[in-house]
Amino acid sequence: MTAAAALAKNRYVPAALGLGSFVAFIALVELLIRVGVINRFIVPMPSDIIAAFPRVIVEEHVLQRFLLTAGEALSASILVTIFGVAGGVLLYRYHLLRLATETWVAAVAAAPLVLMYPLYLVIFGRSALTIVMMGFTAGLAPIMLKTLEGLLATRRVLINVGRSFNLTPSQQFWKILFPAALPTIFVGLRLGLIFALINIVGVEFLINFGGLGQLINELAERYDLAGTYAAICFVILVSICVFILMERLERWLRPVD
Amino acid sequence: MAAVPFERIDADAPKLAPANAILTVDDIVKRFETPDGVLTAIDHVSLSVAPGEFVGVIGPSGCGKSTLFNVIGGLLDGYDGTVKVAGERVRGPHPAIGMIFQEESTFPWRNVLDNVAFPLEIAGMPRAERYDRARHFVKLVGLDGFERRYPAELSGGMRQRVSMARTLAAQPKILLMDEPFASLDEQTRLLLGDKVLQIQQQLKQTTLLITHNITEAVQLSDRVVVMTYRPGKVKRMVEINLPRPRSSEIVSSEAFGRYVAQIWSDLREEASRGLDDEESRKLHEGEKR
Image (cartoon, rainbow over the protein chains, first blue to last red):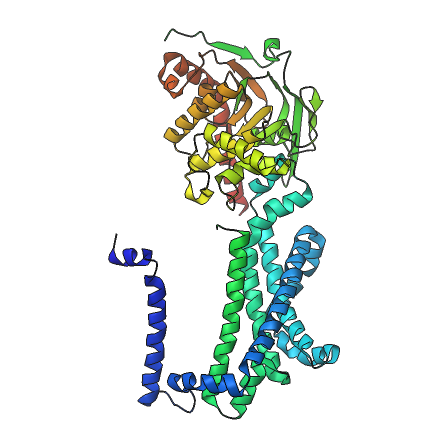
């Protein structure tokens, strides 16, 4: 076994290497800004961003904003998971519906849906609901498409095993099709949730309603670059929380790949 | 070992339709619509299997073996003729028939024990009881100690044994196997053949094996049904009068060699037809392009 392979087997080495690389990258950026290679009026020094955290947390009420954005992201995630997976199942189940709409759904997945926010403002008002619905709309199509792909990719022999055991259509779905499609469904969920989160923060930014998106907008307008980047770190934190939840859910539903 | 007389019997010989047959396949014809017209995959195929008997069906690629497997298993409809289990007509998957497929068919998201317990879970058996029974069948196929492993952690032969244990756990009256060892190497195939013989002898399991491997068919079967190339018809039925219990050591016996040679002489012509047909089709496809 090579030394690299032995290190990869160690429980702590990969995590330490990842963290070490990140710290080294931050230190490099700091150095490049200090020596003037990177313009400090465009990219703030990492040390300034770290120093801005207490100010952003205390003065900008970042906890309430974080909870608002996280709540919107969670609501959109739940909605998009339920309706996206159900939509994918419908497309799988009804061949005519699939033929009639699959191209449209794929087109929606690629469309810049954030531009529809004025319409949503008219329908849902200037509220968190508009933001959640924008996130939901943006995340729906990729989840539907990936659910469909996962179900269609279920190996014929597994379906035949179910048939040979006289499974009911419901058992066939829950015991074979759904678990077989789960890895692909979760790829769709990850994609969909990224789309949803981008749109949630984007619409918060655009409609100045609240949450981390609005904070980023305000800090940017005040030209508080360190504060802006510190606020962006909290958006990344929301993303990390959602993805950890997603990973736990996947491990629970399918303990092995 | 004493020389065993070779018995070669025509397909329509009456002694090959046991009166107490548990499985009766009567005059099956299955046609498929293809872009080139109607293709008859199997043509007036009849056979029957007595309780506890092991029957092998052998034929070249394209003789409709897998079509026959799917018809008997109830996975394919729209055919002429009848399939009966203990006198009851089969119109779809039948609980008395357990199927083992050619392709790898374990559920990758379930460990060995949960895979084997699957049919019992579907039947609504209480958890403790179904795991007890599943453990029994895991042990029967020689996988005790691997209960918590997932299929990805097992070899191809072990996965096929999991599939076998899963099917046996449902305690079917008839075991239907479609080239279950086709993807395995020759040595593993012989050793798994031993395992199948051991299980079949222990459970007195009625078995119908679909295969293209002559050695496997002779090693395992009481009777071998030789099929023609497309359309698949029964060309010959051969009684295998080799002593039981058997093991893979029997493949080195003189009698075994004679059975293999005789079946090959029947199959050779069919396999050649299949090869010629395949080559002319490829040529035709090339010309079309």
